[in-house]
Image (cartoon, rainbow, N blue to C red):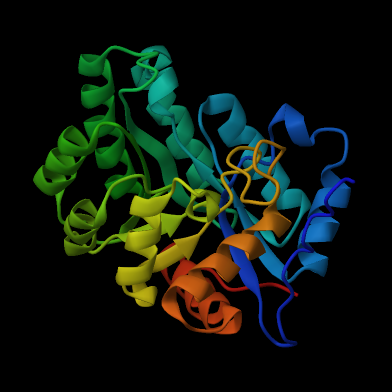
Length: 275
């Protein structure tokens, strides 16, 4: 007999969640995006930040933010694609931000990825530093991608500090010691659905021990679906499973998690909800 999946956790009236990191422009969502966004709102997700990972997706993110008032956008070049960067790339991204200040709330995701190494490490390091400088010039918070590049990523962030507009380590994949160093930079840490995995023990420890005042929630959709949807397409409504797990780890209510992480997201990205 097929097991039925537990329903998406619900919040008490007056509470809401924010998915601080999703890729709404990706092909996985093309056929049913309106239904996905409707489902998110029905399950208390009142805002979604859709992330730029190259020029094309940055432009797409901005278009989505214009179309849907509860969606905000970011721009930036992911470490996988930094070999494509030329000087004019930054000029075009800067123009995109300046012409869409209401829609663009951050620069990223940018950083280092030593798992795939689609771009050489030297190129990743150089362009990471360049993009951090661009973000500072635009007075935007930064969204950091760090995959098996903890030492180099942290060293570069420490060298480039301070970050007056702040930042977040997205889809955090380090241990509690790294988390403490990231928090020392004044950054937030974003917890993905990995925290619900049986083998997500390091992340569970981080979520349990770190201050809720420094935490964001994300899906990283369409990737990294939380249990019970692991291996399937992720979507913004599923951020509720992550919130529920964090509440369980911390011994608090899902509403407390929702209220604080949503407040943190609005504070970092400097926007207010539109109804």
